[in-house]
Image (cartoon, rainbow, N blue to C red; front, side, top):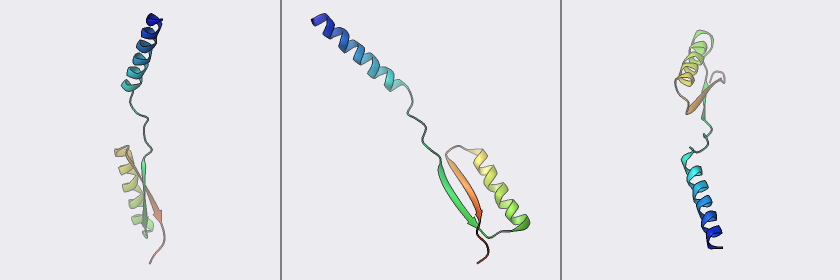
Length: 70
């Protein structure tokens, strides 16, 4: 019986160690909503800037939303 208990403990320690080796699941990106009143060329430029920022990293997502003038 003692040998069976030792085997069980070794198996448990092995699995606990194996689970600790793997990285944690990836968390969702943080979403930033950027409201703006730009139209035409400037609106296109804002969308381009947001797109370049999103492509440059994986932690945040900027969503540029046109909300009209003040």
